[in-house]
Image 1 (spheres, rainbow, N blue to C red):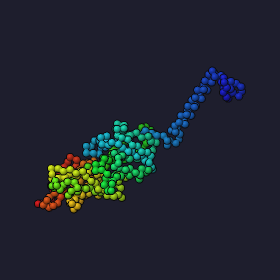
Image 2: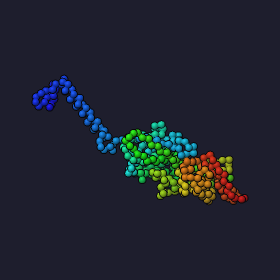
Image 3: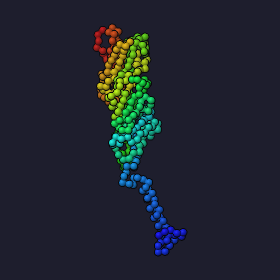
Image 4: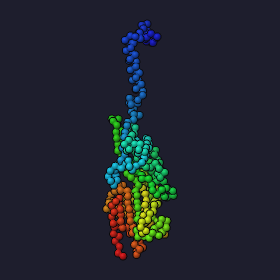
Length: 330
């Protein structure tokens, strides 16, 4: 059978007119077959191998681990960097977005083939204060606080957030997975009471520092053990001429870490104490979760001139203050 100008010719010599019902039926069948073949070739989802079939997954981000026990994601985070890894911990894709660009200011659409995945979320990390490296695999992913020498580039660090979630993508329907973030920065105020204003000016008699090795984090937000010690530098203010406030932004606090409050007078050590050990003396910090939930802490040290020594006299967590009797007799 072949085509000629007036229709289809068969080997027997018979010609099928283009106006005949049989010709029109055969033409419809030809169109249907071509359409089916086009669809079959256009989508890999008709094949036995479904690895290229992408499903819509929505990653919803929240931040509820805070002192108010409400979701503060959209008001606390400005942008996110999301890293996706497969079941073999191999890098799949990276997504970056400002929160204002997200669906409902908290949801990121992801197109992924069916399978098991891990999503790592870093919030507010796309600044010149932080560096994300080792993205090729889950185990090598690191976030690092950038420093000049052993000091952060800025005293007022951008508030950092971290989240991790394992999830599975199926071909059944659109899915939504929720990851709740942890705030990885804390505001620490060290108050020195009972000293003269002339002795409390920054870079004069007294120097306040927080030191410790908490500048590098793995994919799961645990601290990299092999890292150099940091020296956090505060912003100073004075109050009523008899006290000095030293305000710090430090990275994540963990029970039994090595962060210390260090106060010197003309180079002589006056205070050298473990920070989290002191915070656990407060009635408001009793669990590891408390260190992640609360992010504003104040330690007040009072100088007793008769003894020429500072004593811890108050701990403030958010708006709750607990007075401490130093247990001394003067």
